[in-house]
Length: 380
Image 1 (cartoon, helix red, strand yellow):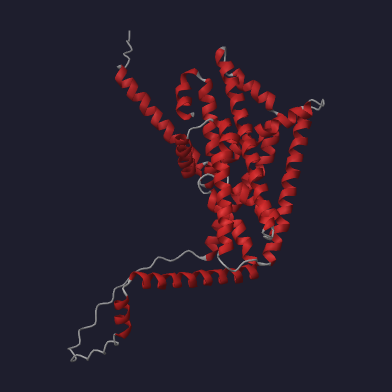
Image 2: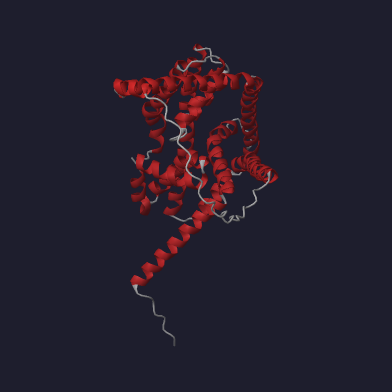
């Protein structure tokens, strides 16, 4: 009769750690190489959580869930279309005035270069003693050196042969750009359908998900589901409300300065300001570019940049903790590490989705007893 000998506890621990490391590496590889699929699914899930209360409102009117989901998705697409149409009208006007903007940009660059040259001359006059300046001005130009006697000619050097790698053609660049753009558009085209099916099949998905657990685990799974949904709705609603406040303040400021296309520039500056870490320079770009059609000196641009910076700091330091921070409960260290991690994996999209992803993990950790210590580690 064969006797099974279990490995010692130390070997079991090493084996479990090795399996955990391999699983983590496999998850990172899946997130990196399948980022288009993962981002599409994640965005669809977040949008479905946001639209769920509207579907529930239509269902109170005794509409079936499938019909209510279809009506909500159509209204959401209509709103997105109207916003895109308004932005397209403004952008078409900017496109017609591109020659004027390029001319004004050249004038601003020349003006800045001239001021820098004057500042350099003034700094030279202040820092260098006057006697050295006069001596440098009175010093005669150096005399040309006499030619030396002709030396015997050296043998010509051996020519070095270098093999240059052939650069890729323009067609390859165009193909790579078009293919990447095609992949993005292809994934974006699936978002409306995914959102509709997630909304219309929400009860079925929840029922099947909860059926995988029994007893108290089912209660924990249900609380985790609701926690993630509430976090996603609260985070997106808080950011949208904060973006509206910053957009309204920006529109009022840009309208008072008669900046062209302020209905487009104001919301762009307000919502771009919400992007972590790089939001301030991105928020400054639209008003500064639009102001090229009005101003030629540097002072108005400095005032516009200072105003955008003031609104950005006011929104993120005062309003963001009250409107958004109270819904995610993440400490600054966890947010910074999450931004670094997801930004490395997914680039700019990762910076936008890092906070809701981390807050979603925290919602799960807070409801699972064995993982509550990790939730406290991420929390504030």
